Length: 330
Ligand code: F1P
Image (cartoon, rainbow, N blue to C red; front, top):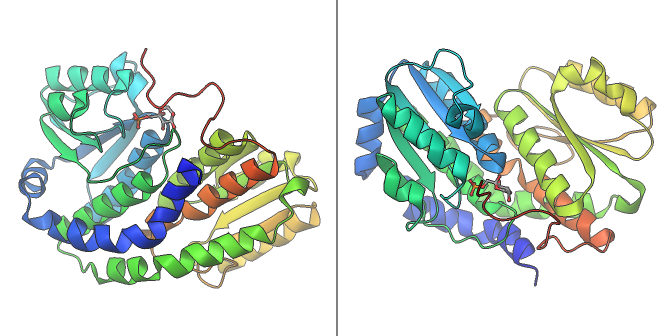
């Protein structure tokens, strides 16, 4: 079996175990109290590639739940000091699955010199990020494929949960969503299987806020695995220019958001009239799931499946994306 497919499918059975054994115990860890103690008015979220998409998605949720300001920045911009107004002190989350991406390590140095407390989020205990960040948070997830899949979902789930815990909010909804994950996986698989992927060569992912982060990651999955032209936009932005590229053969994934039913319906109708196939993910959608922002950790799964299935339909191995390496070392 393909490594990538195995890791995508692992989510079906591993999420519950991971939630019970790791996420529910986060509150008792030292890192939890450290984060709580060091939270500043503005918190930075830094990473590259999928890890940047992860940082962005989590930054929206921290801002929403903890009522602090957050900034998500590609690590390269921090590393080479191209961002304006970097505070003299603060808290910064640095994301790198492999923990050895050059820009993330350089960003860690820059931020530490600026008296930031850096939290290194990774799955590799022996990585430089785990060793060099002030507070490493190493996730108990094994992922070997080049393309990041299950670790994205698991880290997202964990840090959203952590934000709610710090805010003193109920986390019951997370348990429900985790319980729903095997069914969500199966529905996603079936819905995507029914699409004639040979007839679709342009993928568009639309979402707002946290779901915009999910959409960026969805597009990246399809590019990496299936080498298909894929884009992501904040939902209504798509009307402002990008829709000029819609044609028969465009497949649009719309991440549904509470209170937007009317707008989403109209956009779907418009895109369908231009020849696109549209699938909605969310309450009452083609792939149903709660519209709660907490559902973000499940919402990249359909695109992971799409990227895989499209790759197979094109005779491409998702395990060997051309020109890509697991860690970018500059
Ligand atoms: C970041 C990353 C991956 C991407 C690619 C190159 O890696 O951009 O997201 O799939 O293979 O590296 P990391 O810093 O999370 O290890």
